[in-house]
Image (cartoon, rainbow, N blue to C red; front, side, top):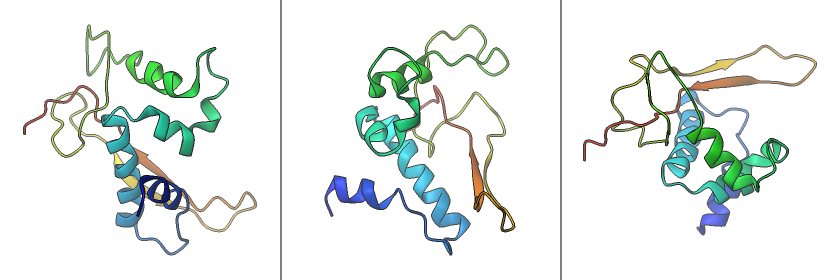
Length: 125
């Protein structure tokens, strides 16, 4: 399967997908952010960021991440990057990673995913 086919297949979540399958999709996109594949992420998912700033979409994603601030978990840190979720240590000691499912509703929203990005983690490889 080509990267384009893999990216396209990640945009549709089957209605009967398990929580682990959904989190697998999220982790795929976190891997793309950690690899700084901002153009890939924007092309597939980032349409809503188009009007954030007067910069192209991929650079918008990069700037949103770099400009993140968390005085609680990262005091004094001025620049951020997404790191590998498998090895990231430090920062938020209890990152959220879960799927919430909703009962049928008028907006047809089936659920949401909480997944705290691993920022500036220490790579233990």
